[in-house]
Length: 145
Image (cartoon, rainbow, N blue to C red; front, side, top):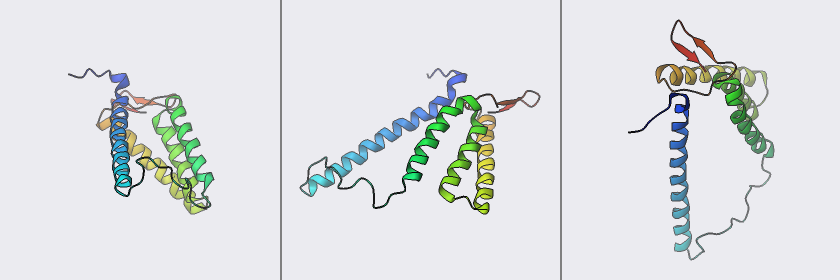
């Protein structure tokens, strides 16, 4: 039997995902290594180039910075507002800053974040990271994280 503490319940799925990713990484390493051995190469070989020609370092480092910022601010601000902000920023990073892109990015950020927050927090009753902007509707019995 698994003993689950309600306040830390939201860490169950990430741990499962991390486990799955580790298994998939091992499968990729073994598959690639066996293919190299079949060609007569070493199991582990260094690639000739890590980046393609003229990589977009702004998107690479922008993604890393936004991802780190998202993780850091999740417990401070709360899931829904943090997700709205960072989904919008990710969309702007990849789609650009034209007025149409900004409008679509804002719409996607708000709708997707609210749907995920309500689906997981209300319907599935999974706790999400809450912060200073978490709103509890006591009369209706649900929380927007």
